[in-house]
Image 1 (spheres, helix red, strand yellow):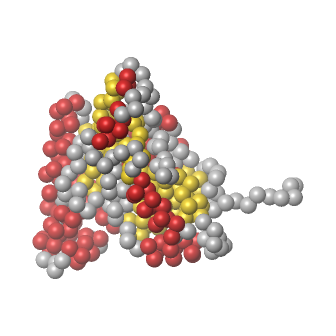
Image 2 (cartoon, one colour):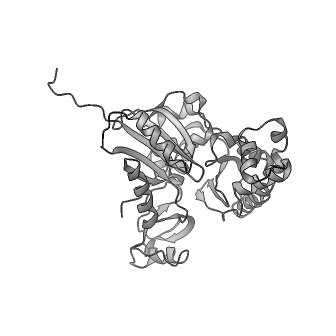
Image 3 (cartoon, helix red, strand yellow):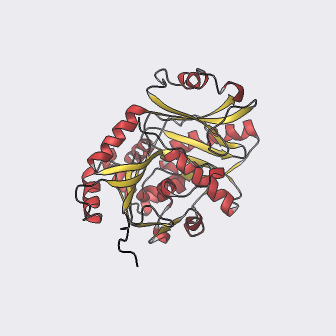
Length: 350
């Protein structure tokens, strides 16, 4: 028996979205399968509750920082489909020029850039071909802001990455694993807009963002139920009764009126048919709205079979059966995603 035995190192998963902070304790941070315990979902702005959860679950950490897998969703992120000329990839100004067309301030010293293969998610190398690609960009200012937010919680990122890339990699892996028969449209419903990504036969496509988000649902609920403000309407939505669910299609009508044409346009342009919808950002208590949106646009609502996927992703989760689809993106941040299925690049420290 060795005299010195290395102590298992604890760590944490934290996923920051527009609507929630998702946390999980990782009691064997550097080992696989990665065990996940004490999963919790908190309101996005409730930093105090997050700090209390960390204190309760890591009583012995003293003043040390917790290593963490971190997902984040900066407001000014870029993730767009583009056809890229492989011959020009080695030119000094080519890639920065692609981003400058989208954001005038997207300079090499202010942003983290990457050009990814749209089908595999890997960095695109220079060659003599045209490639469908994903342009990925995050401002260093938002990386620093997130790092500071994590530092105040006593968290040191082992990996800080755009949660959208992790999600797309995880969905691609799940499709391949299960032979899922449909193309998937993935939504990230924020407060005032909805980002849409379609996992096509030739990789990820990025239609224009929809100009409405959860606020439009809150406003529809306020009108339908006569609540005094959107906060009261949100409370009705988070504890839906029969009256609320009976209005589900009406509540998501503005979203569906923009989502269905976006999907139709993709199908018309590519000849590929989308059959399922996955929504990533809404908290668990609003998951019923995602199902209502799928029904409103005549798509199957994709609920990943975690029992089939977790072992392949190198994860072991206590109470996995009770986790809803809202947790899938957070799980993807810490999952083992095969490179061929689009493993996401990390957002580097500035």
